[in-house]
Every structure is written in C-alpha cells, then in structure tokens.
Length: 247
Picture 1 (cartoon, rainbow, N blue to C red):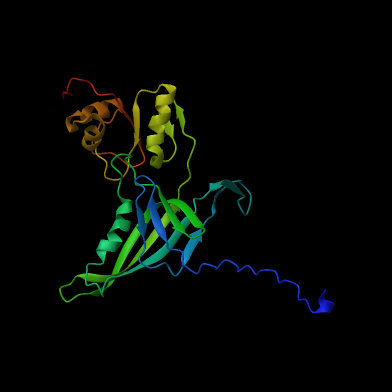
Picture 2 (cartoon, helix red, strand yellow):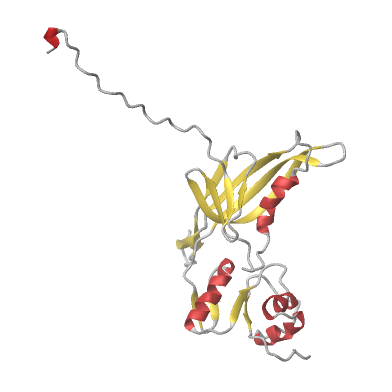
C-alpha cells in the first residue's frame, strides 16, 4: 500500500516509567514500640564487621597449636550520625538523645529494645550496644547545636529457647520469650537474666509488686550477699506469696 502514497499507522509510543531519584532515608525502628527515628543526615560511611571465634588446642610437643572452630561472631554495624540545629537555634540533643535512649531497658521486656536499622535495601535487625556523642558547635549560652553520634549496632538473632529443669540457656535479650516458653511447657516460675544496674529490690518491685519482697528472690536463688548481683546471671523469680517476707 505504500506504493500508492498511504503511510502505515505508527505504533503509539509508551513512555518508560520515570526512575525515582529520591534518596533512601536511614531510619532506626524500635520493634517493641514501632516508633521510628529518622536520622537527620544519612551516614557517609557504614562499617559492617563479622567473624568467627577459634580456640587453640594444646597438644604437647607441637610447635604450633592447632585451632578449633567454636562459633560465629555476631555481625556489627557501626557508623557516625551527624546532627546540626544551628540554623534553628535549638538544642541538638532533642534530635540525638532519642537514639541514645535506645540503650535503655524497656520496662516491659526488662531489656533494651530490638531495633531495625533501615537504609534502602540494607535491613539490619540489631540492638544498640554503644553510643558516644561529640559536640562541635555551641550557641553563646553554651547550648550544643552540632554533634556527631558514633553508634555501634550488634546483630540480633532470634534463638530457640531451651529450658531444662527451670534453667535458661540463651541471650538476655529474649527473657520475655523464655517466660512465654516456660508457660507453654508448664514452668510456673519466671526467669530473669540480670543486667548492669539490677538490684534484688528493683526486681521484687517489678515482678512481685513490692521491693520488700527481695528476700524471697534471694532465698529462691541462694543469694547470701544481696549486693553481689553480677550481670548475666539467671534468677528464678518465685510466685508472690500473699504474706510479706520477713527477715
């Protein structure tokens, strides 16, 4: 038909969908409360570390001891977060302190919150283990308006909880899961893994509703010195007796 001067119809052109150029924003999500903390500026560098743990096997007569694999190490994610409120003239800690406070224990879980660090396709479930602030600019009255927050996150891996005759084997971060698992298999007592700052009176107030009942916890765990409460120890929290503890 083209020989008679008739132009064939053109196929309609379909425009390609525009590519988004929006920068992914780094966000730290508290999985306990679902609260999201967006950083003021994305980190310029993110450092991810991982490794293994080995031990030397002492064999008499060998010049070099062979090594034995023990376990893998949890991955860590570290970075520096920059905060600047100079133009607004407000205290920079209003933006940086919510991140630092993720180190605090959640009163309901008796452990710091499990977090999700999200930066585009980088998704890292973790807990915050270190946070250090450096202030580099101040207003005339001394109010800090510029700071760099150095943070280090450690990977959080959910574990299958193993309870054997009331003993708990696992990470202190999953204390709530231990108690739930204990309820499923008929373990009536509550288990608590101590952390820095724990006291028997504080645990009695949290679990039994009365700090004066600390002696019940001490007796259940054969604790002679109530001030000697090292972190990482598993305590059995007995059920509350209607009667108050006596000396």
